[in-house]
Length: 258
Ligand code: FAD
Image 1: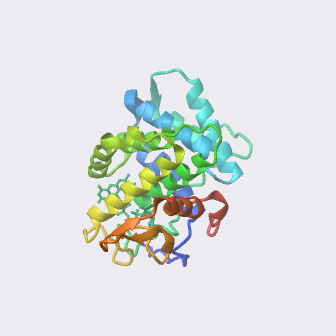
Image 2: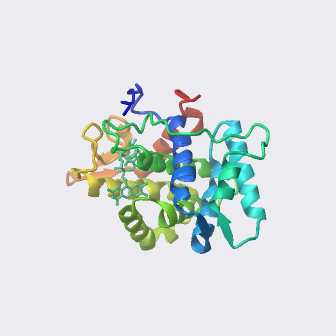
Image 3: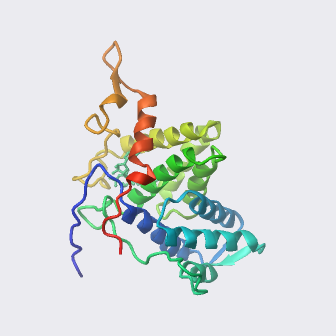
């Protein structure tokens, strides 16, 4: 076995390499476990791809690939999809110019200190925070579109089935009450913290990346306030500003890309 070299990275930044790795892993590894995709799963796939085609702030060749896959999926009316035909589209066997989904995973901000830590689940959270923030900046975006795509993807395909059932429970509680794009970004942030809280100290926690209520005061002092009785509370307006900056497309680092 080859020991992966640690890639130095800035812990307070977001890396395109993780986002592209999330695409590769979800589309070429998790989906490949479903040789035939139909019914609910097919609509989940369509929601996921259409959100990626619309909001993924990628390199031009990656956006082109996602848009071509989306157009292809939207046009075909069949009730069943063979994964192998999707795979041909992902690998661009039709040789559409300047359209590529890079092969393989390269975790950077989502590296774990052991192979079973972090990686793909970390990159899915990151991807969807980025997408909710992109939607805020997109005129005409529908408030629930990104969250529904995440919910559908996780429900149909996310390999961690316990995660999927936890997430579905949270979504069922109140996701449909989200009425605006900013509220959608905040909903995901808040639920992610609930998951962090539940998993703090769990065996799945990488000791070098403890589960905390995020963003910590070092990252965003203004996000935190103390109530008169001494309890902590979030300043959601500041959290929203912070999310929009932290996950913004202009701030994504392009290190380690081929
Ligand atoms: P992650 O929680 O994956 O976070 C990735 C990065 O996002 C962090 O490093 C930080 O920079 C940033 N971040 C952290 N918190 C927030 C926040 N609140 N808002 C915005 N950004 C933040 N694992 C289980 O064991 N049980 C589960 O039920 C479970 N449910 C999951 C549901 C979903 C939808 C997903 C995507 C993952 C789930 N996981 C679950 C996996 C788990 O949440 C972590 O992704 C995994 O343990 C890796 O943790 P991590 O340290 O890389 O940080």
